[in-house]
Image (cartoon, rainbow over all chains, first blue to last red; front, side, top):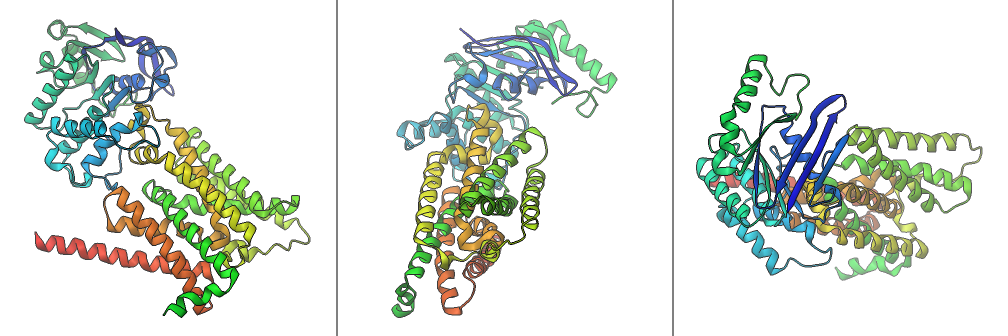
Length: 250
Length: 278
């Protein structure tokens, strides 16, 4: 079954085109990697699928309906940079437990099932020993793992990961890879942006090169061999196509 | 000692004042926890000042002053939320624009009245001793409404206070939660006006929660501590004002401020001990 379908989606930030008539299809049980230079619209693409950004034209469907009409808890999203108040009075377990909130009835208590989901997410991300630690006292990698654990505890039908391996050590990346591949095997569709192409074949069933529009799309080996990504990276390097350049997008 | 505690209760107006103080202290410190965590301290002050326009309009129309204040306070709260979302200005800018506008409207309307004889001091600084039986019923009803809504929205409020972007992506209607909090905040301010007045209500919203924030790094404990501090300061402040013959609202707020500095000192001491033990 198709989990995500984008047809000719155009997103603008005022006069700036972030996505230009972009097409995308993601099936259940598939992990799709999105690569592209800084400012190519990768994060905007995830935000569009999550319903956080509204396109000016085109169709966005998640499980056949617009994202904002989905049942609460359907999509779990892990942004690249968490804009949270780090001094918020919450422990790692408190933050991971928030993943259960979207599906919970206002008056229902935290059930054994909810507790199990939180515990297994903490274990999967190797956060068991840190569960009572205040989030202000975590390293960058531990914070990232906490937010991935919250997404896993949500038990979503679609997982969106924006560069989840940035700032994490090799062991954590391995654990994350194993976890995501396990979830994909169980049928979860995953859409993930990355800069790291070395392990693209391990992570992804399909790889898509994006620079506001789709430049290449297919299995990782074929896409990498096509040189589409190397081409735009070279172009970016030569022409200073960086995040700070006017005209780039988040 | 028991005589000291019981003596104020011989007067019926003091009995009503204690009930009102307990409710207002509890309610303000509960919603104040979200106000502090969302960095909305300025909004309490803003909505309270904006309600002044409602009092003047109610006077002109021959309505109950608190009904007028409530309508303008809720409208201002919703307006602040709307301007913040639609005009792409920061929340403190939206508050600054709307509350000064509403307050100016109140002053403008009042300046055009030849015989304006509303007890302004009562609204500005509160007079909890003047709470009537009807006022108490209104306070109870509005407090029950606010408490039920806060209880029902406990989890979405917590999630959106911490991480609104991810909460929205997961399907929580963040705009609805934000507007609901603003309306509950406006009603809480109206409930508190008679106790502490327009000028001091912001302190009752912010100070107990800020004190609790010094003492813990867990949300549920912060909420419980904030309520304990808010309710006890309101009741103890009223006792003090009875024996010191001082203004009740100001005494309550001064006591809460004292507790804040004690919490701050306690927190600094605990941090120092923790550093020394490392």
